[in-house]
Length: 252
Ligand code: FPP
Image 1 (spheres, protein in one colour):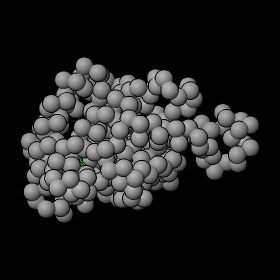
Image 2 (tube, helix red, strand yellow; image 1 turned 30 degrees about the vertical axis):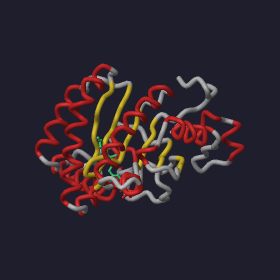
Image 3 (spheres, rainbow, N blue to C red; image 1 turned 60 degrees about the horizontal axis):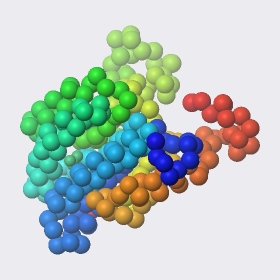
Image 4 (cartoon, protein in one colour; image 1 turned 60 degrees about the vertical axis):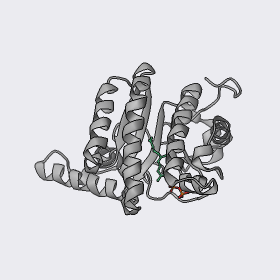
């Protein structure tokens, strides 16, 4: 656990919108892909900080459903970078017992990207303490639409009852079915939007917006976000007095 913070509440799940790779590169006269490559290194740093502070789930928004509209060169470069990074990181993921998981429609990714992803997902499937979740070809609205379709199909089969559809039942059909909700959502680069990322899962997440471009996001920046999280009172619709008087009613 981190040494420079007291042992108080720490997020269990941090989700990150890694923004600013392109601007980081542009400022330095470098190709956008160099920004993405350095962004990959920042993911590695973030994982180390998660381990240090006991944050068991890290979800990173690596490729959105909207990102297919980017120039073909950038998409191809990102997909190749993904293959290289996964293949390179896999031994370390195994050594550190990190389970790699994905959310989004990965079946639509290029075959080489999909193959290296599947290999890493299978090779780490037995781990459960540390989780790196990559959102790939992910968008919240399409995830919810897919879940609704699957729920409806299950209801037609008689496996679900439409009258008892509530959040607990419905959320089992989301890509995040067995992943706890994010406690803290970080977006870098100064933008303050959610951009179709984990919209329902972040219903009670604390938000932290950092002005730093993602490739520059360091351990110190992450610690600042964790400290900010620790200073907040999460009320889930209750009053402050209720929360402070009876913390046990906060079990959701
Ligand atoms: C947003 O920055 C970033 C992305 C769309 C891609 C994120 C991908 C990575 C960090 C690399 C993933 C690689 C591995 C190895 C997992 P932007 O391009 O929108 O930046 P801009 O807003 O400054 O143009």
